[in-house]
Figure (cartoon, rainbow, N blue to C red):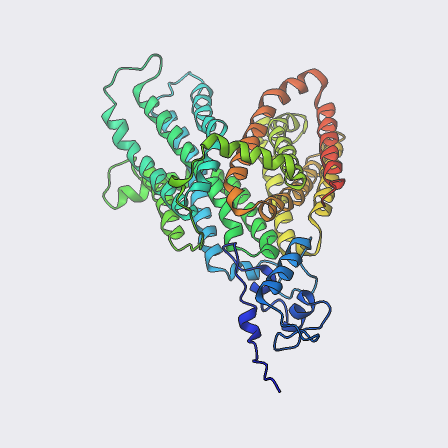
Length: 506
């Protein structure tokens, strides 16, 4: 009798992976029992515990890999009996904690940086009796220009470089640039004006342009890193935390910017430092702290030697566009995100007009309305991270479109403060239901070698969608009125939702 050698099933389950993380069905042992894994991968139950086909044919490692791959490709949402859901498994991931910690310090530094620049303009260049808006507008145009010009190019370069290296070095350079501002202003204080602009103000514009350019490399690298360190069925929770952090830093960063800068100056003087240096130090050090936290990150990515690849950066951009043409799911997700950010950009303009028609609110208090939207996004993101894994992404997106459209229509019908605050918060919840699943769709669908290109294109498109409403919404409101603009935005959101609902690849 021939003795058949036993096969170690644990060894067979150690399948090779082209991704930086293990396949989600195997990588979450606590979420799936061995019997569940066995049933899902081997649905005909003709494989015994020694890896031998009951028909007499030994199941090879290649066969098992193929079945797991087929399982992975055909799943739409994670299995219902995955035990670990919500934020806990994501927060147990030390690599995500490092990325998240770096994001917190980096995002707060970005927001406080803008407050710092406005404070410097107000103190050194703004004259009494002048309007400060011209100075601030010039600085903001300088800050947003790299996003439009370099967004796609930066994403293509990120695909060629180590994501961790990009994350760390961009933060170090941004921190160094901010720390150099006092020295640069001191060196140029006796320089002649360059045209109509003081030399010191030109220094601020140059530093701002460089900081924003580095941010264009940081953003796609950060987004492309998340699917490298997070298993597919936890991406929704990870993106919920990611989005909550962005919105939280947007609200908190601008709110605490001035007090933090004042406290930093005061503390710096108390420990014997020169006046007016504490502000630059706190912002620059925040970027550097983010860099040191990101040093703990392990992406396990394999970066090819791209010096041997005869590809041009423009061909990489063309590859990204061609991929969008062939992958309807990713293209529709990008369209949804574009509509979403356009609506929220329009809301930042319309919030001033809404505040004007509310009897108990002044126009300059429009920030309360925007804060309500931010709170709504945070609530929606938290709910999605905890419970969203049980729903298909296109269903979540359509639900978000219905919520947003309902809120926009209702906003056109009332001028009561508390009702408007509720509706804007409800609008934020709908935005989370659209934005987070669509971002997760892009991360799960796009192969690792294309993520930098796609995220670069995404950042470029989103920055344009954030800019165009600033130009046209105010004009449209003055021509057709606030109510008509809200109804038009509601129609745009519903059309976007239906476009995703009828996606043939859902």
